[in-house]
Image (cartoon, rainbow, N blue to C red; front, side, top):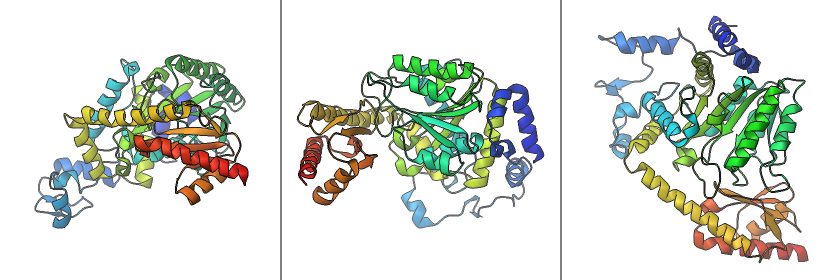
Length: 432
């Protein structure tokens, strides 16, 4: 094992031994090269006042070399904020601004110790870093059965982890914290679990209430008290898109310090929060109570970034940073959230009218981009295909009964028409 990895592991063993035990074999072996090309380039950037022949880019006239036709379309930005490689950890200014944003939007973070966000290539990249650091073959990755299919690829296929699911809702239509606890306690023999909490949920658009959040935290704590070392990942992809009486902040803050056997990891990003899906800018933040432990995990994270994508898009980071610093940022974002809220409310209004009750129920939703129908008489895949081929209506089939509808991409005035067509499709399939 590389001596730098050994040093990081020794640090974790000393200041956060439980976190050390949570690491996968890959996580134990990971480190960020301190004496390699990047470190030598960083030293030269500070001290090479005559000539700096370390940079792996081309320069011209003391600025990054670039094509004029590209710069013409980006003339509002300095070439130095676009063309050079961004640091593996991301632009320092962006990391600082995002941390301040987290603090302002999550009151439970006040007074807590947590790391500085590291820039990732959006949410999937952040989740894959979690998988690489903590998931070994056979480890349990626990999540509700209503989940994003990419988790299977990220944790299951890539790392060989065992995906363990429990029903998202209990019989009262609330988050099934009892199912979460049972799934964690089932890992007592192995002594380790990874829990993924995704709110607002994809595919159902559900976020727990404050009371349900208390129950979730109690379940995580009870599992930790039973001896299960638990990495809890808050996948906050749709953070901020809260439309009704639900939790308005990430559970990340309240998970910090919950129990020594709990390691919170926050994965979030500008992708959905700022409506910049193609920019691919995300963040990963560690919630150890030890600053040294956070630093060690961040160094291992940088090793993964260095060994995979090297660094994330510099232009995208610049665009997001400038947006976050703009005086109209919150006003413009709130305007878009209000549009999505109106679409969600219209969806619920149409579904609550009772016109379609013989065809489907719907799962509780109060946030995010999506909602899910629970079909009563036809298969979801059959309806998906029928609606697509006959009416040109696209939806997502999930299992036998569930059909996901993204109200986020429907104009408010089109929502009723969509459900009319789906209902017509159900009736036609019933008669076939």
